[in-house]
Image (cartoon, rainbow, N blue to C red):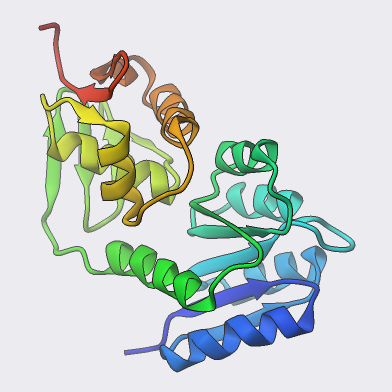
Length: 227
């Protein structure tokens, strides 16, 4: 089996080498870019990149613009790195479809663990796993969602969130439980992470976004039809 390709984008060569060394030890193939413009060129020339690790502050084109360029054509998982502990940056990242958000300094081992968790969930899905609820049909193997028969383009994290909701229909889910289950680690953030993703997911699902109901003071419940 071919090694999965990870694109590491950072203007600091020392940081790229550190991340690359840890990824290579886990048998990933690593591509590098030292600025945003080069990152876009590498991404679209390689075409089969499985995941992108993207720094925010870079010359020529910053990480936000790179994310926009990639998201315009692909839903590949993106992990954003930043040296700024600014919640506005974090919210912007989630609005742009970033799947994970990690502040520097960080543990390379934790970063690799998150890379593996994302790729394991996206590549270890067994075939013929189709979930249906009302007008929504979700194919886990093909990583596709259709609403009323029409394809809906979801980010990796939005797809995982919808899958979790659909697999737990009718169950009231706390924000903490959703974070631990969908993000797969203890996320040191707050409800904004969940609420931002739910808002975007509802918007993309159209009228069927009403299936995701807010349980005030707790979290959410996915349910088709009125109780």
